[in-house]
Length: 242
Image (cartoon, rainbow, N blue to C red; front, top):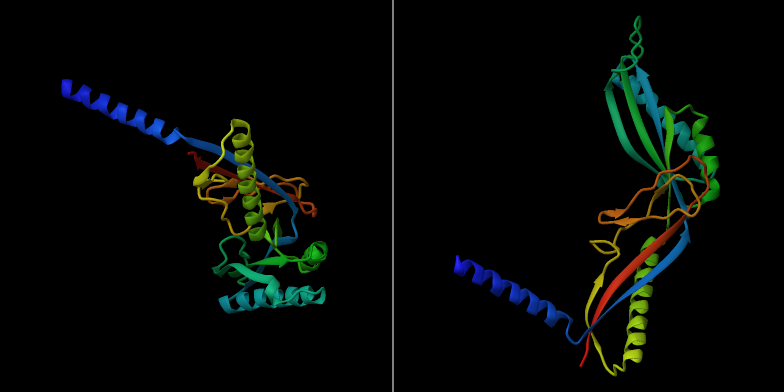
């Protein structure tokens, strides 16, 4: 028992000593920065369903509808690069078969994501798709073309802010020399490294909270106004003092 208590005392003393060593002759500062930017990319999803008495007929029915939508979107200035298939199903129709006919025994569903780098085309694109009676149009989202650059910019500003804070403290405390010993990005646990910054809906002045797996999705109304995104960075810098 005495040996056990002795071990606890030694461990506690070591931890206390380490904490003291860590902070002794060190200056710890934090830097913060915020950049606001208006989103300039829009996305939305639509679903097309084809039905038929055979799998082949249902598939061709859906493909024909997709071709018509594609041609209509090209007429307003889009191309194949603006479209991507996000979901495909082709098989037995489990939901709304006809009781006295086999004309709806099979179903094909194709979901397409439309990406627009011109927000002025958003309403035109949605109106164009709606002409062909899709099963639904949903998931309007907004993003930044230059999110990666802005993420680096806000991190740089936070780092500069930390250095300025350190210089203010050093000046006031009469510290004549110091050098960076440790730097940590505290924007979120894995650093400010998400590749895109998406928000759902269309509120203006939308704040995006950065989480460990990227950017938290914010859902709001179904209007077509692009939101403002706020990118936030925070860093910790530890300076070694003489």
